[in-house]
Amino acid sequence: MTDALNDIHQFLPCRTPDRWIENALANQDLMLIDHAHCEKKAASTALSLMYRYVDNTDLLNKMSRLAREELRHFEQVLAIMKKRGVTYDHLTPARYAAGLRKEVRAEDPGRLVDVLVVGAIIEARSCERFASLAPHLDEKLADFYNGLLKSEARHYQDYLTLAEQAAGGPVDDRVRAFLAIEKSLIESPDTQFRFHSGPV
Image 1 (spheres, rainbow, N blue to C red):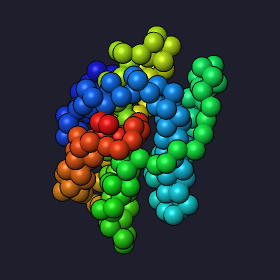
Image 2 (image 1 turned 180 degrees about the vertical axis):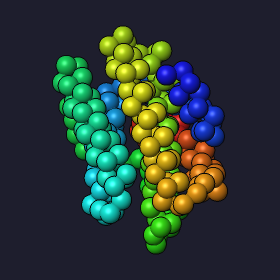
Image 3 (image 1 turned 30 degrees about the vertical axis):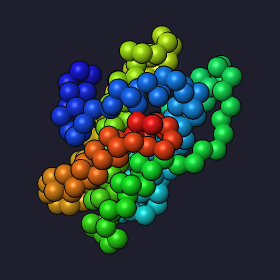
């Protein structure tokens, strides 16, 4: 897992700010609620890609597996919340995913390439945040977050591979463009704490 995490650290333009970790530790119930929403949204994204691109066999297989894993993670977060007396509820969405998706091109194949690149970045950041948080959490939650690292790292790689297939070659330019946006979203002050927010 160390190699995969090192790869993610090299891929991402910055580390999670210490201030965000402080925010997360001070708002663990909210963190869990938003984490559950993130898992559900990740499954929904995978399913929507399956509905839209029915002729892409590699995408269908990888997104089917990813959706099942994300829904399993969703169920696991809900179980942790139930044990801790945390009520799952609606939350306003973070600016993070919307900020990244603003730059997605409107027409295919560019649209598909960009959606997959954004998916890779979101999975990579999730993995980095799980690893950043785990040393500061209680043993049970730390074990759970450490256990998620392997699948999140694989999802990041799957998305990047699919993006390169959709583009018919390297996607370095699109990755750089979206990572620049991502860096700004992660480092600039945010108005509300969320799993993918900037520091509040």
